[in-house]
Length: 112
Length: 114
Image (cartoon, rainbow over all chains, first blue to last red; front, side, top):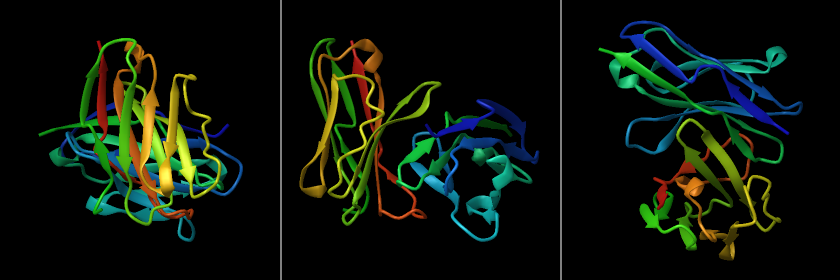
């Protein structure tokens, strides 16, 4: 069965530090990849997505992610985090049957 | 509607009672998902409806859980004989049925079984 692994459950950073959140998936077919974010007290919302083309995708608020097919990875990055990036981040994979599976999430806390 | 709407937003129920959670997806979205969000467990897939196809129920944790989607729109998740371990936030999401489209989430129903 397909699955999504997020390596870090909790991350604490100071403002201006760089961020990289790992995501690996297990599925042999074509996938579409997503990162969602849930700010405190808010809905889950899309941060960025990959479905084809350039494996480096850019999303909102300066976030980007790189799809490395050979590693089944879709890591999220941001060069310089802000206090307002404090949130929970979820990696998700949408398979050929269009079912979307999520990782366990990573809680990011940015110290001001 | 403008977004995915879930009701109620909070539900407290006694152990052993049945509960029904409702989801109104975005108009025109033929795919509908239910997930359960528990502390430290991430988003657990429960069930997926896609148009008129048979739903993918592979994530339902027990036969106490069931869901239906009437008329291809509104969905109801029913939990029978609730247990304390059912306490969680139940999230509904909808999307267009294509690979590159994202899911849009409701605000969730926080279920507490006492």
